[in-house]
Image (cartoon, rainbow, N blue to C red; front, side):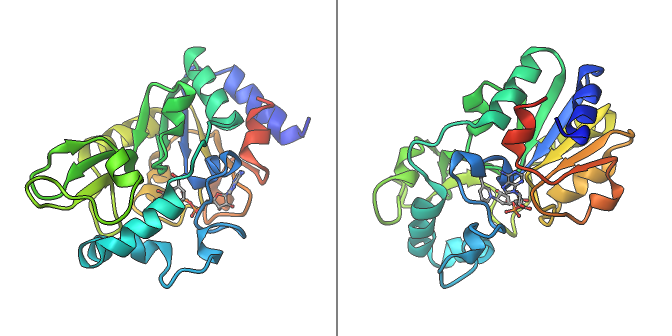
Length: 238
Ligand code: CNA
């Protein structure tokens, strides 16, 4: 086994306060493309980059096009948790992992059995009316065609944080608390380019910060351990 993975395993074995902070790269091995890798969403042919389509302004201006992208690119049939999601859920059951903090909106950590999951950017598995706030089953946004509307006439939207929108304060505060008091912080599958989420790392005060990401990130030089490998492969060994 890779010497770095052995070290990460030793840290985890010796701790009961591991926190995981992740992003889109955690779900690529489940078949959901991320935004920035070679076969991620940035390299596909859309008129606008994902960050534009997934913005508040765009959603208000052109919900039709938003939903075309949403249903084609964010909703992927039959996806299942991969080895990273499953091992994280197991580490929580073993009393080692305190929380999963995720930028993902796919619900795969909960599908794997994780209980304490802080969804910084919400979830496409929940929906509500943008006018009267009535809750809806996610099927109305994820399937079908056109723009889903509430009885009140408002556009039904996914319960995700679009670009230009604020993160939920309670979730953010809780994420800061978990990270600040963590013994081991594993950051995985995130380019650490999207703020304010990426800045959460700065709250970590320990000396066991592990970054597990295929490509390098702006935080590589600050980490105590950097592993540039597939996260599912790493987690199947720890
Ligand atoms: P990103 O900016 O797309 O970066 C993903 C990172 O993961 C890249 O640096 C890749 O090198 C790395 N990566 C890809 N596959 C693997 C792998 N198998 N093992 C290890 N590393 C890998 O994504 P971020 O999460 O950093 O950006 C934040 C955005 C993307 C959030 O707002 C998300 O909501 C949004 N997003 C979410 C999903 C999802 O829910 N699954 C999918 C696509 C985008």
